Image (cartoon, rainbow, N blue to C red):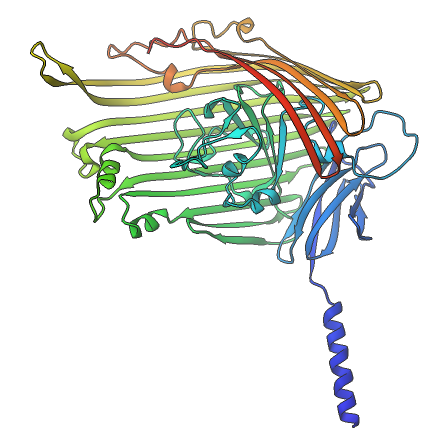
Length: 595
């Protein structure tokens, strides 16, 4: 009897101990002032409907241990608007990094009530860009049905964003926003411009069948489809700002992802004191899948990505980033020579591409603000070959050869300040551009002779281009909220120039003003409006085109101009719900080249 009683008590004790033992995970990050970049001390980080929480230390950092699960995490600080991050998944294997940038309340406090401000949680805009803004978190991208962890594909599900990924027969990530072409969008990764974000992209456009960026790096994606900040050049349709997380400083961690088309591996961890890294590599095996399906195409790609974050001092941080891809699109005759397979084999070129972007971004805190200096280089090579039937690479059977290379070396310097309720920024950029193109294309034209017989005439275009020139520009932006934060306005001015086109060095030709207004009628209703003019230099394949006599014929091209008029109403009935209605008019002026 005693033995039986002891066994039962032991079983109950072990069962209770097991039920009380919880698998824990870690959330960590930094809280800063969005206007000055300074760390905020003593900020409250709390879990919604839970007693768990912590506060930020003297350098703005925090660390919170939680049982594994999904949480809504709220950050609040006296004199600042609170923020909430929804559905953050905490796991036992990896550290979850969440950084917050809080906005200061400028009106006097009458009663202190800690609640998450609906305007900052649900609304994605800010004082500079108060409308036509949407945000995506890393968790939203990962959980998007049908997105396959592809950022470019998930973005196309946002309101006002179109594309070809979901169309019948369409398998490309050509992002079309409010009628603008894919090459009217610009992309920034941690403040550094990246011209290519998709594999097998069309030159002069960032579109392609699958994205390059690894979602494991992404902390936040911001899409602005109008009222662009004046610091961004060459944007006619949208600006994408990708913010990457830092590698954790506690120890090595990683993940491996296997899908129906590719395999990806990611690692991050510390290198030394105040230094961390995150790195990934991805490999497709579509060529094996298409071979099993007896399709004549053999797409094959690699991509790589890294970020090294260094906190050089309390006031200076440095980020080193890189992203690159290798793409190969070849053919092999199918065993079943159907009409469709023969057409694919005969009509498409062989494609070999590679591209990379590397850069460093230095951020230094100054009095009431910060200075950012970004130095980067991007290179893109696109090689196309087309032979009769694409079966034998015999030079006499060649129809197309294009070996094109675009290289840009860029410097951007931006100063952000916040004083006396005024938020202002100014800066400049300079780029050294080199474009080369070895091009041959043989075409057959059908003609009718005097007797009515149809004959074919061969026409060949053959030229080489090697040009180098400078692009440069400057901007200024000023913003302020008045009437106890009820009315906010922002005015920006930008001009871009280049040393290549005939009128490219006249700053008045590309003077682009933009004005945004936002009126808060109540805690739930806002009225927003903006007007602005934006400019974009024509793509390099147009600027570098030569005729058969070897003459550059498009130096008289001008910048493409677009004027946006936008007005909208925003309704925020609760913390996690946002409803907007916007009217949009876009006027585009294009001076077409003769070719």
